[in-house]
Amino acid sequence: MARFSGVEIPNEKRIEVALTYVYGIGPELSKKVLNECKISLDTRVKEMTESDFAILRGKINELGIPVEGELRRIVSQNIRRLQEIKAYRGLRHKFGLPVRGQSTRRNARTRKGKRKTVGGLKKILTKK
Image (cartoon, rainbow, N blue to C red; front, side, top):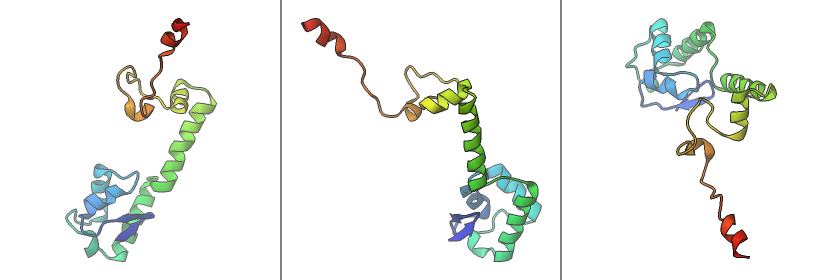
């Protein structure tokens, strides 16, 4: 497997798809960078040389695109800033609830986590 920006990308995949394994590079950006580097989208990773990867790295740096660790740091700093100023979005991040206005009454299991049953106290209190 080849390494690109600290990420192992699979050798058998086309470079267009393999670049999307890097955090911060999606399908459209991958096509754009490859076209600017004049590298065929159908090229397999195993067919590329180290100089081709150097050209790709240079182009991504030239475009000023943050990827992997740098991008993760930027995102976490933005979330931390929202929490520090006690913005609504920051509080939603802090409590692990959906941030972008989604309903939580029936859904949002991914953000809220496993169900925790609340209730059953009424029966205990009324038995006495």
